[in-house]
Image (cartoon, rainbow, N blue to C red; front, side):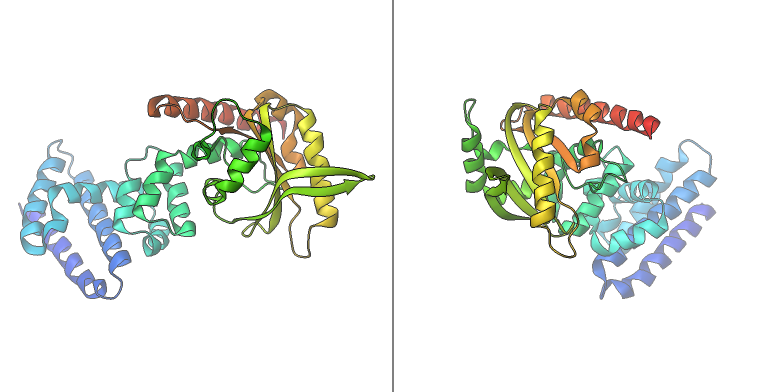
Amino acid sequence: MLLENKLLNELSLLIEQNQVQLVSQANSTLTMLFWQIGKRINENILKNKRADYGKQIVVTLARHLTVKYGRNFEEKNLRRMLQFAEQFSDFEKVVPLARHLSWSHFLILLPLKKQEAKMFYAQKTITEALGKRELRKQISIKAFERTSIANAQTTVSAGIPVDAFKDPYFLDFLGLKNTYLEKDLEEAILRELESFILELGKGFAFVERQKRMIIDGEDYHLDLLFFHRNLKRLVAIELKLGKFEAKHKGQMELYLKWLNRYEKQNGEMPPVGLILCTESSREQIELLEMHKDGIVVAEYWTELPPKKELKQKIHTLLVEAKERIERKKLLE
């Protein structure tokens, strides 16, 4: 009982000290208060090795703190604070996150199984100023997993920035049926340009469609040209019906070299290419080492499978991507 009273007094002091700051820095102060409470209770539970102590002390503390300070400290919320302090255990990392993410954001991140996913979505929330609804959507459409799959095609020295692309891209908003032509796909993208840019990710700005290039007196046309403001480089996009073929690499290499010579402006990084296919040939892509030429290949899906099947498909692709990353490390 003496130990419980000591802990209760410590937590009360902690809450009262933070109440002064809450007026001016509500979000970050409240979040860090919850982290400190969770950490302190976790430490107390670890010191006491009785199996039933953890359950008992949380119930007791919640009862006293709720009476004294309100519903924020009910048992359910205290348990979330314990989870929060355990999952985001590094004080040096949690402080800057708390400046930008609300407690509600952290509650959305807690159920995620992988720590890398938690940090990915936390950073995405900061850079893209995501609200709670947008954060939930990014998690539901597997942004972390799809970005990780695309990252399997990049290396530090490849010239393709990490986390810049996804695989696959979800283009179900285009409303295309089973039979469509390349021209139909391009026109549908231009009709739904805002949605397409949102799916590509933050920073993409549309430049031109059917970009004309004259090489040796012949006309060539790139399907879509974008500029990535954050990466400071042009992004060439080619749309392909059907499976990826090795010849697509040579075509994109030609376009990138032309753009690098004639379109790249001072201060910009070299252009990169994104080839979108209905099906990617993963072994060919690996053998061709396309990342060395600044080219990423990704699938696009115009229709999404049911949620359970989607989850399984993305999981399978992610496992394959991790295997490719490990093989690549062996060769480097």
